[in-house]
Amino acid sequence: GALPTLVSPSLRAIALDSNLFSGGIPPQLGDWTELEELSVGNNPLGGALPASLSKLRNLSLLHLDAAMLTGTLPSGISLLSKLKRLDLSRNRLGGTIPAQLNDLGSLQQLDLAFNAFSGAVPPLSALGGMQRFSLMCNQLSLPLPLGLRTVIASASICDLSCNAFS
Image (cartoon, helix red, strand yellow):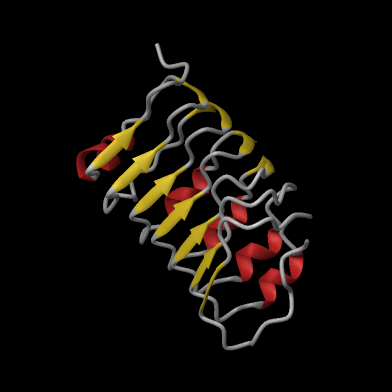
């Protein structure tokens, strides 16, 4: 069934991982403006990331891994300035990785592994506080920007394997 859309307006965290929710991420999710943690991974949701996610300005954790998501990573994700952990791994997301990710200065963990992102990795020099950084198993190519050195130097785990780098 569909993800619930009626919740308490004061809800701060919700974890609905590893269920059978389907039918996409409802746009009404953007109305949960007090939400700090959203974890709905490992569900056959499908569909694209709704633009309304950019209204969740208090989010520090967003886990939508293995959710059969398609489409691109919306540039509006850069409005989630409190985001510390972003996991969109094991989906069917594609296109280029938006340079606006560089606006997420609080980001500590970024996992975009096992998707279909292509092209060059954007300069992400503002993400110097990164602990875990994974872009493995996409279709990314050179050149690696100089700004990525900041991320690599600070990360405890950095995985760029299984791409089209040469």
